[in-house]
Amino acid sequence: MDLPAARIAHSNRDHIMKRIGDVMRDLPAANRPRPSQTGGAVRIRNRDTVRCPICNDAGYLRNDVPVGHPLFGTVIVCECKQRELDERRDEELKRLSNLEAFGQCTFDTFDPEMPGLDEAYEAALAFAQEPGHTWLFLSGPCGVGKTHLAVAIAYYAMEWHRMSVYFAVVPDLLDHLRSTFDPNSGAAYDDRFATIRNAPLLVLDDLGTENATPWAKEKLYQIINHRYSEQMPTVITTNVDLGAKGKIDERIYSRIMDHRLTRHVAIDADDFRLAGDPRRVRRRGRGR
Ligand SMILES: [Zn+2]
Image 1 (tube, protein in one colour):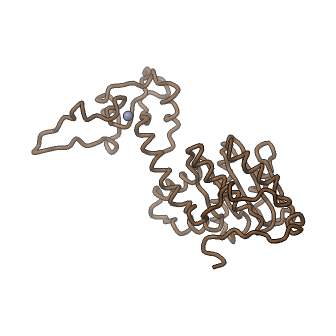
Image 2 (image 1 turned 135 degrees about the vertical axis):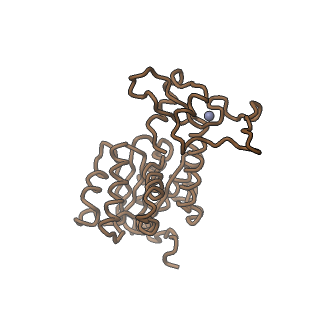
Image 3 (image 1 turned 60 degrees about the vertical axis):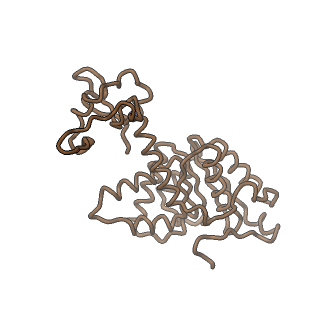
């Protein structure tokens, strides 16, 4: 749920406390919890069983503002409800990310001594330690460990910052969006799309390899552009030659290359080849 009002809950607590009866009267009927009925008699909830004393388990509170105030009559999500929504989102992102498929790709298992990789390693670790309003963009040839670093960032953020992360290989993400899109269930799809777009940390691996339809391209652009304008922490990797035009959508490319937001580390193929023995990161469902 993407209520701007939810933020008010934390900044403006004094205004929002309102007895539950008042709140319920103002909720649209569809959102109103039904009283459990036994034999025609409405059971009154026992005070001792109330889990949230702020909203009496209604989940929502009314903005307590005078008539005429722009927020008059609007409801906000109680912190108990917000917690529940966050947990549900975390579960969904975790399930969609399927990070287990990448096994032991952590910072501990990465060799930063490899020529040409020290800067990428340092940038990835710095990003993982402080994922603020910044983007990290890793470009370079296949097999140099960009995916390893991207996965390591995801693990680190989950473990040390308790952050909710969505990790996706771009072609898989677009396949997923396509396959789950059903014009008849617009609302459910929009919710899923919003969950992905608003993931607290988004990691997109392998940008530019997708063979996208105009529709999928547009979806990808919407995700990237949203995170760009909101300055949400995002990691992107690509194998494509950045000198070759047209591999990455021009609009996406211009946002990624905005150095006010993005730290870009280009891993040099020659440096890496000199070292020999390029490690390969095992990919989901590929090369097996
Ligand atoms: Zn509550």
